[in-house]
Amino acid sequence: MFEGKFADRMDFLQPSPIRKITAIVSDVRAEGKKVYALNIGQPDVAAIPAFGEAVARKATEDPQVSYTAFIGEKYLRETYARYLNNYFERKNVSHFHIDTHNVAVTVGASHGLTCVFLALFNPGDEVLVFEPFFSAYRGFVVPSGAKLKAIPTKAEESFALPPEEVIEKYITPKTRGILVNSPCNPCGTFRTAEEMDMLARICVKHNLYFISDEVYREMVMGDEEVTCVFEVDLKNDEDNEALKNLMICVDSASKSFSLCGARIGFIVSKKEITDKVSHVVSNTVTCISDTLQYGVAAAYDEVLRDPSYFKKVRAVYRERRDATMAAIKEYLPNAVAPVPEGAFYVVVKFPEFEDISEYAMYMLTKFNLGGETVAITPAAGFYMTEGAGKNEMRIALVLGPEEMRRSIQIMAEALESYKEYKKSANADPIKKL
Ligand SMILES: Cc1ncc(COP(=O)(O)O)c(C=O)c1O
Image (cartoon, rainbow, N blue to C red; front, side, top):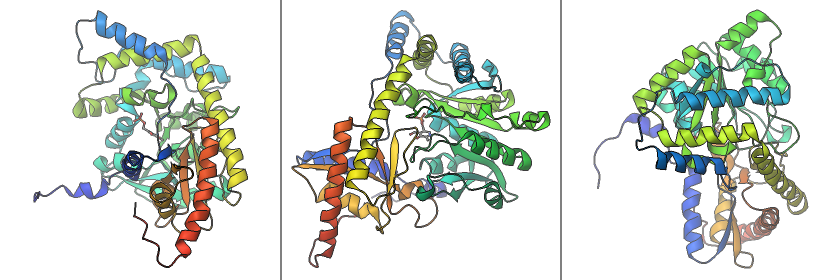
């Protein structure tokens, strides 16, 4: 029995509900059931080959694995700046030019966001964020002592942002930033160019940092491309100049190249901000992996030469998304499920439910259709408002179109079975998640 005391901040660092489901999935599989695991949060397509080839070359040809520059190695920062400028040219949009000094390398976007919060915010500062949002943000903000303040969006409105005057009502003297994620985990929604302009206007008016998490920028399923924060044009030199001091773009190789385990991310901002982020890097992890930066630079180099990797990945997810949405329409006609435009998730809302986590546990532990069942992520963890999202789930598009379709069919059968189970007076209680 451990009788020591932990720091008070540990109360705010809760274990991820997503990890809890993963542990239950392993147990259920060990019992012999086949589980379609739609709770997974990482792409399942193969990583870009250029990464592995470059890592192997570096590891065999260079006798030293060295400490690297705090801000990240110059060749990687240069390559990333070229990639981002090329992204704008590909889209034929005007944009703020990105130089090498605007880029800092971090241990994935997770560490990048943590560094940004540490560099910019004091304890008690508030950062506005639109819910549902990536649940790990709650942990990333803890070391800085700042607080997230959630602004709700709704499945019925395809998770569109509320109007400017509503957002402004959430601003207090403590508000220091707005955090937006497009395409969004968990709902796959894009922030439109108009929404990005609106957020930039609010940030300039109230002097708030505009933090844009764009880790899914390349994972789009429709014809439209994501609006990067550096594309915003407030049509007025003074406002655009002010905006330059407030914009922070967060990116990562994790999703773009299926390199979640490489742990390489980027902060793109004004030089003064990237310099401060690099101070946080040096004071937290010293520097970023030598060999892996080399591999990630090769990945960006490769897509600059030939963007077919992104095209292939987009086609894979588009096919899965289309099969999933068609199956939801067919098997779950009462569900509200806005069509995701990017990332690789769908939020499905069952208006008649009180608490979807019980259904999720029933499906996983008590139900099977021909020996098969499905794991999903209850969406309440993506909300901060008490009681919000309890009748929503997130499913990840991590299986082929036929398996996605079969999963939705199983979910529909499990739903009917669960309703019957709940009616029976002497049914065993369902384990809590
Ligand atoms: C919206 C969002 N931001 C950031 C991250 C963290 O990404 P990384 O692997 O680069 O730390 C994730 C990971 O799932 C995410 O979904």
